[in-house]
Length: 387
Image 1: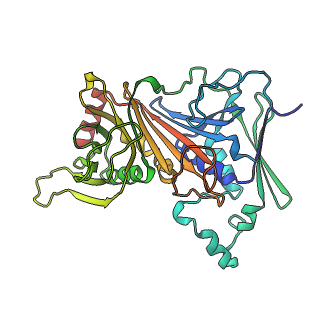
Image 2: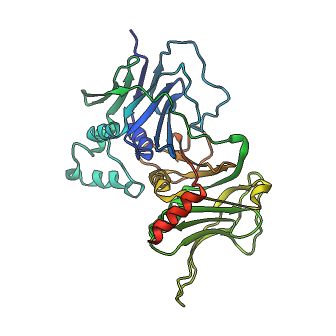
Image 3: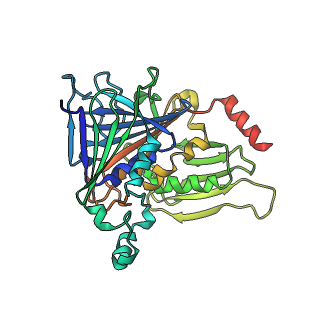
């Protein structure tokens, strides 16, 4: 009997990079589709991470569906938004065990600031080991297999003629499991920018250990886009993505705020030395800046989220090229990250357009969803931080 799914990859680092972006939860729900593998993790029904391993990441991808069902043609292939089709097999697996397995097999995590390690190792062969030798990384294949419903997920690494196999137990998913809904027909905010800018802003705010991330966006007056950290033991701090005074704000479709800049505006602590500090000027921080709140909200969108949950997306922020920040009328926040993977086992920072193949390698997407804080929850967190 043919296995239900078999996927072979000659670059398992790509799989590890994407899955580590959503590694904040111990278990993941996996869905096998004709177009790829969908990994979903959630915590407390208030945060969800979605990573889609497109079949283009595999040198060989075989899905032997027991039904003649077809994938939903209305879903965009780059949005990780596919619903759990009842005809497509899905199961729960230990994500932490899967990541540990890849590391045990020598597929070590590489940060962007370590992308030169390979050249250093080649210059000094004595520094190579069984887990980091470039020759091993090149002569290796990783096979994922799911034989049938209820079978374990098998990971096999083959290198230099030696095959190592690991089997991970699979579990039945929760019947009540569902995605955090993002109302696509009620999107009131869409901002596309370099992911590095968002990562830097969150890192700056994190230094004051806040409990709440406050998001503010307006298309008509400053601050046009601002992130604030509040509710912690220190004073509130704000990062503003402002517009150069020599340029106007452009809010049309597909347009952004030209000559934008990011600056940190600390709260007034009563000291004469308290002042705004400006970071480096960025030529175009936002590629797309669309803010259109309903009349009931006024002209500004303001929403609060648990900072600890936003922090869980830091890994994705650090490896992604671009991020699409979207919000709907209910306040659900979506951070969709575009990750371009090169052929040398490390993410690169060169942005490209949407698609499955960039100039240096495949382009994949990781999506995070966050449920907003209610007014009473926000007040409680701010009170806890002031104590």
